[in-house]
Length: 203
Image (cartoon, rainbow, N blue to C red; front, side):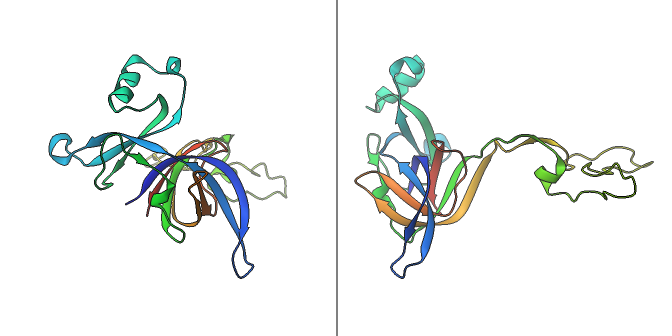
């Protein structure tokens, strides 16, 4: 299995051999040094920990710097563990070369936060009637029973904070791999804003 951490640069388009236009997201991925390897016998699960995004030493705590220096890695902003990623050694560096065009991947990231939103925008509710003096145009309407149980159940669609949550987009196709510039071109959109950190794993 292949896995890497990257930065979403934005979207563009490429043209296939038959002239078809393909919308792609450009991800600057890696190189990511292996910081730690989790063993099933010792740690209870198998995983590999990668680092991405160099930062000045002053921006990290002493514990974080010590953890990175033990692996011989420079100060890094992001550390992520990927489960069941095969045999890797501490100090090894993973690049985009582990991916190939046509491969299916899943991309995880934190979606763009959209602030407080009503039920029509947040949950795709229908609006109420707008004629005959109706005051229920964009209100959510009835959300609970009257007498029994006389309360609103948990999990009901309500107004609230929209976006800003971790999302995984699955079954995306790798269109192109540029190992010289550490770029992955993935068909379609991926979660997060421009320059947001994303995790790319084989699906």
